[in-house]
Amino acid sequence: MGNFTEDKKIAVWSNAAIVPEDKDNGKVWRKDPCGAWINFNQYGDTEADYGWEIDHILPEAKNGTDHTGNLCAMHWKNNRSKADDFPSFNTATTSNGDKNVDSVETRKWNESTIKRLKELYPNNQHLKNC
Image (tube, rainbow, N blue to C red):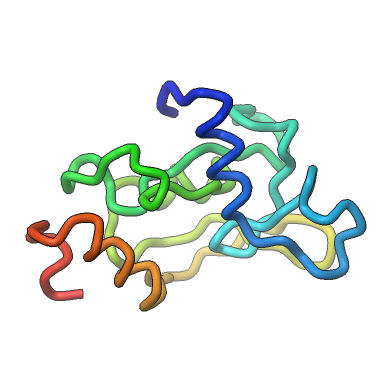
């Protein structure tokens, strides 16, 4: 997990998916890109059921940076499973109702995310064939 400021943490959290039936309007509960529940107060807690970290969508190993457009809030298990894989990656957990459940599946970043990354990193070789 990187060394991110509180402002960066809040900015990344604000980009995570708000669930319409969630009564707190995304202040405490959101979902990561894999559909797993995350809890704002469990940031950095890799023992917590709803712990999350800030993930580099385009990994640093592939020349991604700490630009907010390249960061997302991701359940810690999914972040570990994703590692430096891009654009496809494996999940470790998703949700079923109001609980997280183990779930391994292959996902790929959506077109709008890839488009944003191509704008951020126009010369990045890892984005050329996406």
